[in-house]
Image (cartoon, rainbow, N blue to C red; front, side, top):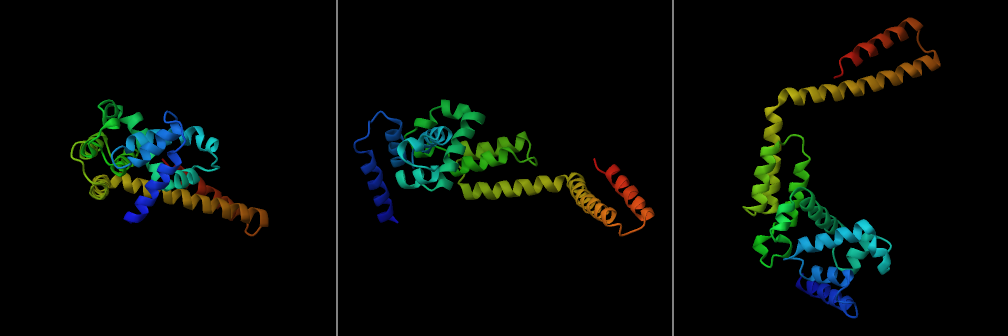
Length: 217
């Protein structure tokens, strides 16, 4: 692992040679070298590269080819980095303004995996603002590691879903009704086209479909 890491850094340094030190491409490679302590800066740069497809100007047809060959990062990791950065910029800009982006002390930086989990939690309907605030505190103030945070999030979601059994039941009911209606409508159409059953039965099927539709919210 250490040999691979050294080789990766050596490849980055070789690519930096001959580049304008003020160019974005050089800046990204420099950020990749400092990945452990400046992922936010790397995420910001990668977001620009991905959004504007700048990698094509540097001879790469795909974003994953650029991240893998130029800076030695898998596409999955690169996407987490840029999405986590964009999430901070959009949802938690105060943390960027407070100097996290240029922090030289790793302890001050929230882990990018943890920020990514917080990003995913933001869109979970089962969680309210208070739940999100609790998770945010764990990420930015307590520095919870991603594995612990992921477990806490799973437990929190399970607890919230258990607190709302009526809502969960209503969702299952709606989903089941929709599947049943789709099947009945498809069969009714097939029977009508093939004239497989008497018109009276088809009429009864239509009435049943109508009644079931009335049960949908």
